[in-house]
Image (cartoon, rainbow, N blue to C red; front, side, top):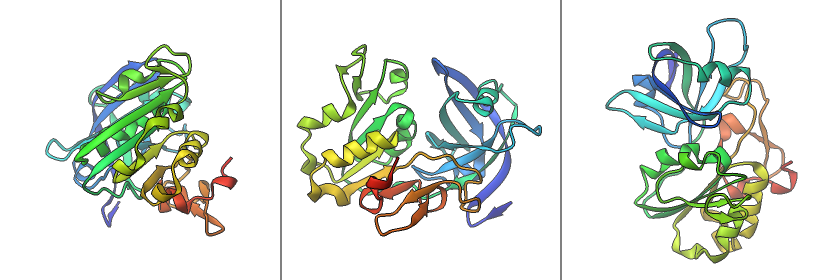
Length: 254
């Protein structure tokens, strides 16, 4: 299948490696998708050619090399599908549908990127488009911090790496007006806290990448609603996963 840049194809595994405890990086040879994907978009990966798991898994593009025709994903093993994917070997086929969704609105200038947990996965791709950026990340423990881009300012709840505390603690001394764009990705509660800590005058510069369970990945199944500040719901996969923070009704986010 191929229309309007959307490709459904058999990719080949170039490499699959364990980066940290139950965190893996997989690189796929998928030239047509590599030539079309943008930061913040995602793909649906079929972890097994068999009957189970039934649905594909949505993963954010972590990096892309159009010249080499490859795309890379960083993922956490959280169930049967990602467990199968983590056991992939060089040369294995992986069915992939993408690129999907609306990515980051990239623009010149200085970026602040704030991640919670494996929300950091897509920031290397976004960083490749930024003139200048400060990256901050928070995790419960040191697990996964080795996957962060070099220079990332870290906070861990147990204090094992970086500053002890939440990533929002790192924002207390941030000069918000010095950033032209602000990107936030992670658990909903963390993103809501980041948005709440920002001065109202910069809300229009904040984009958030929402995490949601997705069945189809392109707005057909209706399984990933995001409450809209204008009432009703938006589709995380089709209207997002990247939204303007002011377009999300944070009071209705669970």
